[in-house]
Every structure is written in C-alpha cells, then in structure tokens.
Image (cartoon, rainbow, N blue to C red; front, side, top):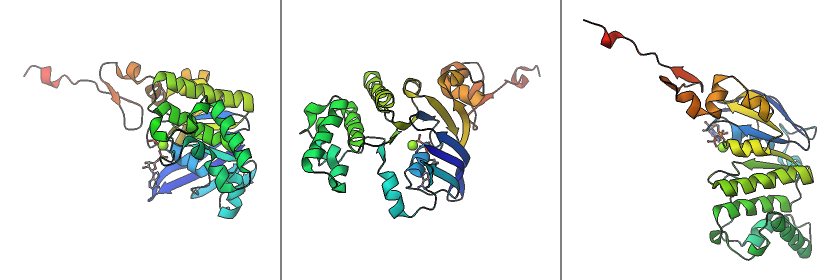
Length: 269
Ligand SMILES: Nc1ncnc2c1ncn2[C@@H]1O[C@H](COP(=O)(O)OP(=O)(O)OP(=O)(O)O)[C@@H](O)[C@H]1O
Ligand SMILES: [Mg+2]
C-alpha cells in the first residue's frame, strides 16, 4: 500500500506537486495520467525514495519514508521494481546479464538460482530465446519486455512503470498492456503505471488519477473518467473532438479557450 498525504514538492521555488493526496491499495493497478511536466515521474521518484518532498507524508506498507535514512530505505526499495521510460537496459550487457543484474549485485542467491529466475522472468514476457542477445539486437518492444523481465526477476511486490508503451506500435503496446494486466490478475502485484496513452490506461487500470500542474484533477474508475465533464479532462481525453469546434483553442490551464470573432473589421465605416 502506498499513501501520499498533502505531499508538496518544489523545484527552484516552483511548485511541482501541490498538497497531493492519493492512495494505492495493495494489489491494485493505479494509472497516473496527465500532460507533460505535470509531475508524474516526480511521483514515482518519491515512491522510490529517490526524492524527498518539501512537506507531507508518504507511507509504503504503513511505514513513513519521508525523512528515512538511506540505509533504512534499502529494504523497502528491495520490494519495488521500476520499468524506466526508454527501458534503460545496459547496452554492453547481454539480456541474461541485464535481467539478472540486480540479483547478482545483491549477492544473496546462488548463480543457479539467479539463472532460474532470469529464465522464468524471460518466459513470462515470451523472450526466453533472447538470453544471449545484446540490447542492440532487440526491437523497441522487445527491449520494453526485457525491462519488465528485469523488474520481475527480483520478485517485487510493487512495480512502477514510467511510460511503458511510449514509442511502441499498437501491437507492441497491446502486448505490454496485457503483461501488466496479467501481473495484476495472476500475481496480485501492486502497480503504478504512468502514461499519456489512453488505450494503455483503459486496458490496465483498476483506478486512474489524472494529474495536472501538480494537482489531482481526477481520481476514479475508467467509466467515471470517460463521463467526467471537467473541460480540462475532456480536452485531454478527446482533444480532436473539443478543439474541432470553431474558435476553440487549448488554454494555458489545460481547458479550452473560446475565441469569439469581433465584428469590428466587418463593421461599416
Ligand atoms: N530535478 C529537477 N530539477 C528541476 N526541475 C525538475 C526536476 N525534476 C523535474 N522537474 C520539473 O518538474 C516538473 C514535473 O516533472 P516530471 O518529470 O515529474 O513531469 P512528467 O509529468 O513526468 O512529464 P513527462 O510526461 O514529460 O514525462 C517539470 O516542469 C520538470 O521540468
Ligand atoms: Mg515523466
């Protein structure tokens, strides 16, 4: 379980998260939606304890992590895995070495136990035949699947994904969404998925949060989101529909700016 209460983050005096409160119950897949620069990746960094808020509380499985010394954060972080935007594989390591990297670093398991976990994780994502390949030999979609296998190899309880389907074609995006869905259904992992992509969001979410300029604009189910009438949410969900109306432009606050033509130019002199 993750719980944010009144979390505030500022960078260079500029607020990036404002009194942000949210909860991710154990076993739930929460999707965080929102436009660029809204504070989504910042939220993942807060959960991982890589960034501390200026104020507020963050509980992970009931334990306060704000202000926790790094050595006490290590066992908490060991229960988490992150799938980074852009996969973040080590180019000079094979798929086998990439997937087993954290386990080898931790040094808690024998080589044969690590090998078994590596193969199991790669089987889950359907890439068991790529063990000896190098990242450069893989497509973008395969890299994402290896990144998911790497996350799973550590048997995490919580998996965080930053834009897991960005830059993928619809078939590969669908494949990744299905993997996330299966992890929720079959392994009951708690998952937080940051995405811009509505298809992915609708497919994987138990619940969604929409963040806009550091504030929570929406918190609810897919059906509730689809029927929300806040103009900023409507613009995000279907910009083509909202902005197609004559005189409608995106507004700075994420809503719609309606420009009514003045008659001055056509007025008789
Ligand atoms: N370390 C940092 N120092 C200064 N500003 C930062 C830092 N990290 C993030 N920011 C700023 O905070 C804001 C939110 O950043 P964040 O990366 O969380 O956005 P995001 O919602 O993930 O955006 P995107 O969808 O583009 O990935 C942005 O304006 C960003 O420039
Ligand atoms: Mg981001």
